[in-house]
Length: 152
Image (cartoon, rainbow, N blue to C red; front, side, top):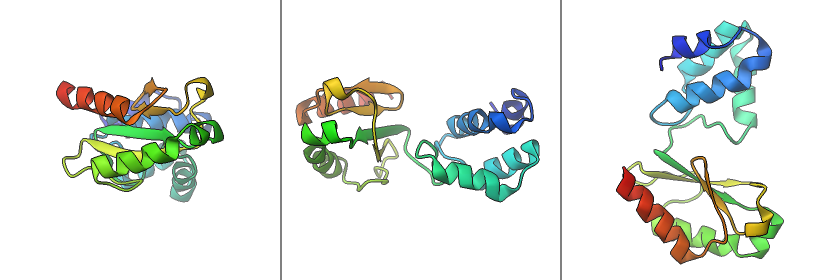
């Protein structure tokens, strides 16, 4: 869906800013909010560019730089940390050959951290795009990522 069609889905009301920004980001093949997206949103809602940019930079769910086709969000909440998330982070960084915020050379994965996924009972946990995975081990992480590589 193009930018104009996304904007027309919503009333030009400031209460729709997050919905608009999510749809704009989701429609971008590089899964981020481009400067043009922020400008279009600001114009549509009749607010300054700086307002929309500040919202985009405040929420970790939005990115202002290109990302991979698949976003890995590893939970770093206290329960996940206690159950080994730090070791999994080291494993993911080594396996993917990226640091936090980085994207693999093939553009397949971007590695991010999140403060809480709300699934403490299955810690450590991560999301891959919108899908949740818990009780993670390095082997389970490999299985999840290998399956995703084969789907593309």
